[in-house]
Image (cartoon, rainbow, N blue to C red; front, side, top):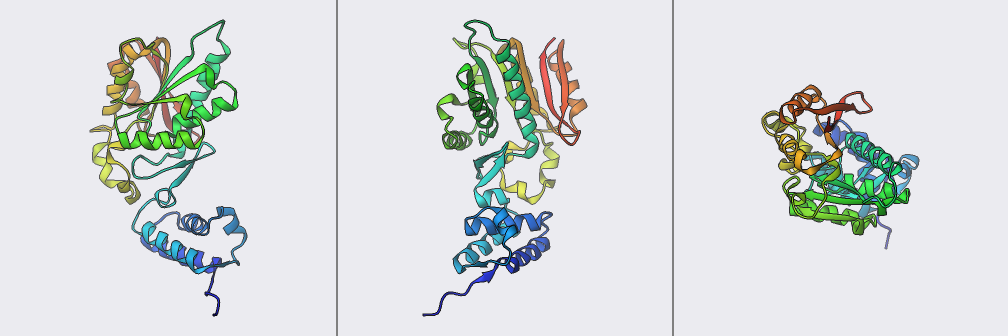
Length: 304
């Protein structure tokens, strides 16, 4: 019985690039490389380095099925079921927003703040209390936990992750388990910080939030890939800051006297978040941190 025919990786990449360009993809080459690598079960660099290699019929079929999905607009991350973030691989699907590279700035600032607090601890100080509000896939809190574990500092920090979506929380837990930090993170269903309010709990030392910040009118005009993501994770109301403003209103009760809130914003919302903080949190400080592109990305909010 003759062997099943194979096809050349280079030819398959060219096929993918042509098809995805025709469908409107702005990253057709990268998309094709990632999808072919995923279909074969190797890393993308292997594909790039061995474009002359033969590809078996089963992998070709998987690749072309993935091209069909990508040509219809579905994000590559959902097709592969994985997204790289902060040097880690996260499981992703339609239960939560796909982690964006710009959100890594939020993790960087969170790590720096926790390390600063750890360095200034004296005696039997209580654990540093950190909450990731609207955790989604859990990318922020899991990336922070993994970093703290590398620093041998995880035991000194209390991590809480909240989300209003049970589905998103389930995905976040799966990612925490996948990175072996599930026991270090408490997950609670909550609309913003409501779960952490009153009772025996101490106020938070650090509040992290990557909440919806896209203006309601702008959501329909987002790239088609965004239509596959939960709209509730994107729609920030009329001016994009409605959900964030609700969080600001909770900070006086929830944030400790020397606490810090780090809130991701849109690149066009730097002045708007400062104005909003001044209105909702009179007398507080709000400073905007830039991302690597020099664009407004994270608001630092604390009591004066």
